[in-house]
Image (cartoon, rainbow, N blue to C red):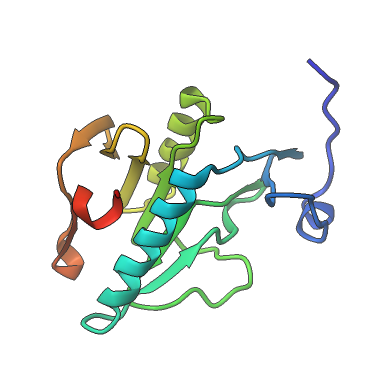
Length: 166
């Protein structure tokens, strides 16, 4: 394992990283898993789903938006959905209604579970894990629970496998 280098939040927020943007956890930039085709396609379909929902209800869908969960912790969900107001700061500092992580082959499940729990601790009402490879969807409340439908009662909406998987 290589040596880790701590950098300040200000350095991290003003640095361009080759490939995907990095998350920042207590002094250390953290690389994100590279998405593959299924990850990208699923992300696009989720964005399209929530984009179409905008015609009925006030939602703001944001793919890969950097969010400040607390001092020293900046995460980037694959998709964040805000309701009823949009994030005003360049780095979102209020929890979205929905935070969605999409699995890629390079993900470590332990790290993904930790990230999902951090969203729950931040009071994100709906935290989802979507696996386009197995075509499974999970909610994160007290652990991961597989679900055939992801519901958002506040919006009167539900996401089914047919909505997001090819």
